Image (cartoon, rainbow, N blue to C red; front, top):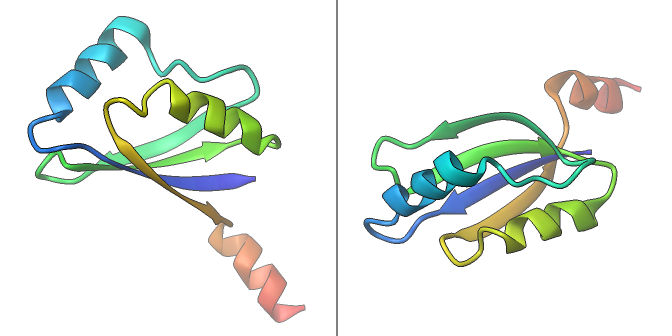
Length: 88
């Protein structure tokens, strides 16, 4: 299952986020896979796609970062999967 994770950083909080990432990496548990990410031009939000078959792993990972950001999680599918689901 794919998840779009929207991370919102507090004003001026991006350096703390990137410092932790530099020092500790993504800190994702085994079974949670990073797919790709994009950061807005103001360094306030990161849009990250993660993949796992166990949503509990996603929550475990977010707990390691929740002191530095807020999360919104949206289960998503690829465009190809959407076409297949709609055209059946």
